Image 1 (cartoon, rainbow, N blue to C red):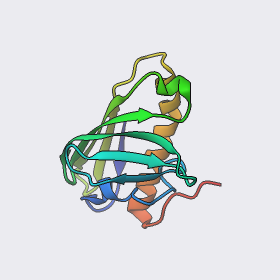
Image 2 (cartoon, rainbow, N blue to C red):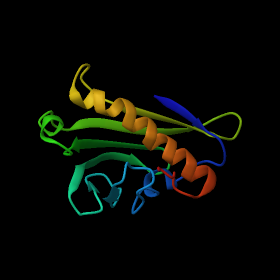
Image 3 (cartoon, rainbow, N blue to C red):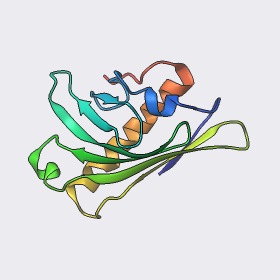
Image 4 (cartoon, helix red, strand yellow):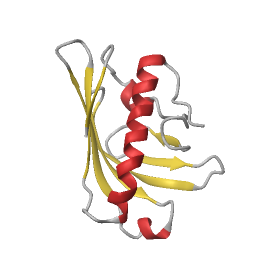
Length: 138
């Protein structure tokens, strides 16, 4: 999936904005040091773990590759972690293009769940970058 984000180049905000934000990450808070080898954890407001993983590679402001292990229910947790990459490229008109790639098995529960969730997360990122405010979800 790719989405063009208008406005200034995203810079480190791409990797740092979700920390402590629940508006863009489906009600979770993301914690990581955002360095290669660093763990990352998505927690619900009650402190339970929604997902976890590890930062595998990072080029600040440009690219992050991570493992992501959904834990929100046993059926999806049993499928194990997936590899995701988030890449930002400048566009000719001064905006940025974000491409999110997930290594999903077609027909898996993970693929089904990610189809809707990633769209919401990317929309939240776009809203935050353009307005400085998290996406409001009613």
